Image (tube, rainbow, N blue to C red; front, side, top):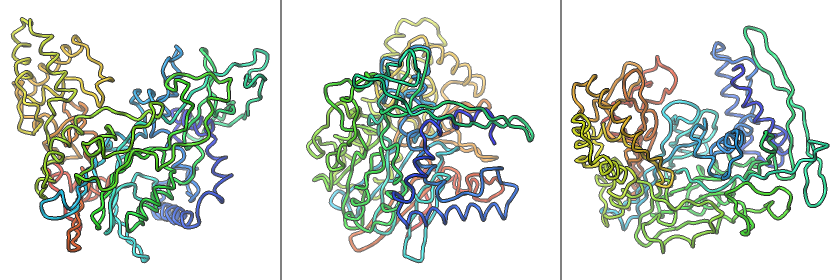
Amino acid sequence: VYGKDAAINDYYVHLMDFWNNVDSNYESDVTDDVKLLCDAYAAGFNLYLEDYPEQEKKKIFPVSGKDLIAGFSHRMPLMFGLDGVMKKLSKEQRPQLIGLNGNDENSESFRMLASNVFAIAPHRSSDGYTRIWINSHQPWDGPVAWYEAHFISEEGWDFYGGLFPGSPIPLVGHNPYLGWSHTVNSPDLIDVYELTINPKNKDQYWFEDSWKEMRVRKVPIKVKLFGPFSWTFKRKVKESIHGPVMEFDHGTYSLRISSLKNLKFIEEWYRMGKARNYTEFRKAMEIHALPMFNTGYADKDGNIYYVYNAKIPERNENYNWATILNGETNSTIWTEYVPFDSLPQVLNPENGFIQNCNSNPYLATGDETDVSKPLPSWTGIETHQTNRALRALETFGADSSISRDEFFNYKYDTQYSTNSVIAKVRDRYIQDMANEKDPKLISALNLIKNWNLSADSSNTAAALAIIVLPNAFNEDNLKYKTDAITRKLVETIDYLENKFGRIDVPLGKVLRLVRGETNLPLSGGPGLLRAIYFNKKNDTYVGIAGDCYFQAVEWGPNGELNAWTIHQYGSATAIESSIHYDDQAKLFSKHEMKQVRP
């Protein structure tokens, strides 16, 4: 259907053997109610195509419920960076570090990007309310762009949430009793083994003192050429005792991947969405199918909860799991996972506050004593603090009595912490350029030097600063090069002067929300609580990711329930003729939301 560019995806599907796993285990591993749910969603797809046949892609439809289970199996490893690991292996030189480091490839099509979650208990609010921000950061378009839905069933299900295309259940959101959000975490869920191949038989590898046969299959990959013409070629895919095998000039490698055979992702999210209290929600999470995602939770009973959810392999501590492992020994093959109860987590911390912003799970409350004992380094659990985490602790975390207005204002914070990566980069770069003589650069350097680290739409130094200065979640991943920053500075000076006549332009004039004919100012920037990531398109810096569909939910001491939601565009994410294609954009631009409850 999609031509040669999709052949790589077909190879990935065959290499991971998704369909064999689904066909073999669907009846036993997928519960009856989840089968009915998936079948109903698929029936809706198919009915739509009966009504709008021009939308059909040949040989894809009709869709079945089993297709949805397979779709989640396909997508999940990409969310924790499997394609980054595969790309690293496919380079000309054998990589030294592997595993989680694949995530620095930054080109994955299906990865969730970032996110914030904040929750406060009744004793931390000024009015006795429990509150939660459900605030993931996603691309504004594409396969992991949120669309919003309100689920209402005759069984009593009443849920506002966000979904991706192909999902029959909400992945974040709230019902009248509770709400939760996820943020992306980075546990080490992939291990790579180098195999010793028999020089006389490339389908054999040395393992535990003897040659072992790989499982070898020849799989068809059909490529659309043009018009009615297509071409099918055969490709060998192999599997060792460790997992799928990849062959390159610099070696043959096998991948061992967390949760690769698990078919319960939809069930876990479904049970979470149907839960009515903490006990039921916790039971749903203990299915422990989801291999990743920090989870922050709040409910009408005043409970708040945080867990560093992850399906982390139990590994032998005598090996360096960040490197490529020797594939000849059984001692590096794991079969068990770190139990859910052992993951970093906290229920109802004494200070009444939890947060996570893709950051150190042991500082979820700002107090290391509130969260579980640190796990070993082979888990890959991150311990850095993003700017968003720093600012969460400097705003929510510094206020012992948070009002509703403050709860909203803190979320829309547009300030970089003085301890953030970008603040340190600014100071370092200004020092490196202290002897600059070019008057044009000196003027720009002074603007950046005196920048107050705010990215409000009216700030006249922010545009130059956030376009020019490199940034990163984790300072260890920062790529700092003075010459590269200076080249970007010269380029941006020219851009601002040519387009606006000066370099001290209010950020909102430079950074825009563009949707069809709609063109609106934005505040925010990379790594802020008001997160906006941008690209230059048609000579304009436009928002492409970050704050998108998010919710604020509160439960009062007398049973009150209020909720607000916003989408960066509108609920019709792909239908340009709909009035809902961009009807929320103006609210989004102005830091406003629509109330959906009561």
